[in-house]
Image 1 (cartoon, rainbow, N blue to C red):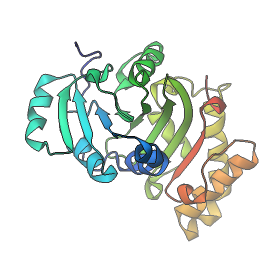
Image 2: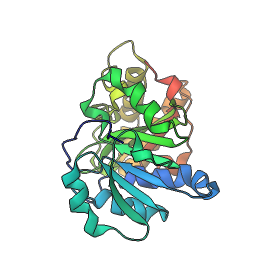
Image 3: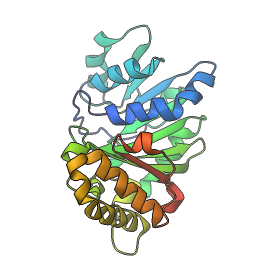
Image 4: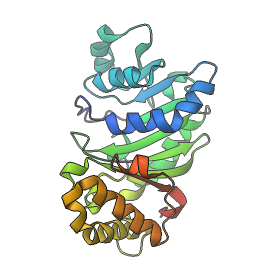
Length: 249
């Protein structure tokens, strides 16, 4: 089967995807535990296999790293273990039937018009997809949870709060489906605007640390009518999750 997709830049760093990995463990852990043969695919792991290695260690289930570049697959082969493999593959997932697919910093190089087809291809066999973007060090990230058959369910924004100037900074790392819609009149722009307003209003709480300020900003957005799905235990990690329908273009 010929791999579907294009070679990515391949940039990666250790711990770059720690935030999304921990979210997958917390949010999709039940899905993985209920699966008869749980399998997670790390699609487009890049020039180094480190993010796939870390994903396997964090989830404790079999992981297959897929790359469309044969040279990257060959370079990763020495890192294989009983529960970690590397194969040539793209959006067709090399014919695998995983439980969960993580595809980070992959669709950023594609056109927005290509996103629905990519989501559908990666979830066609029944997988849950976590698709998103982060900066080089993983301090800013945003991702969409896509259900089997390609329907987006949620959007999560995440940041290392100690380095965050304001929530709107996460806009530069929005997934491809949303990044071009951060303009007045669009719902994703309104969400970031309201988080920024709450962040500014909570400036006096900075003396207690950025977690308290972030929590106040999320509470403010919820009071403004945003259907926040997660709870303070996740907010303290620098996250907020809303239904995708609330921000969809």
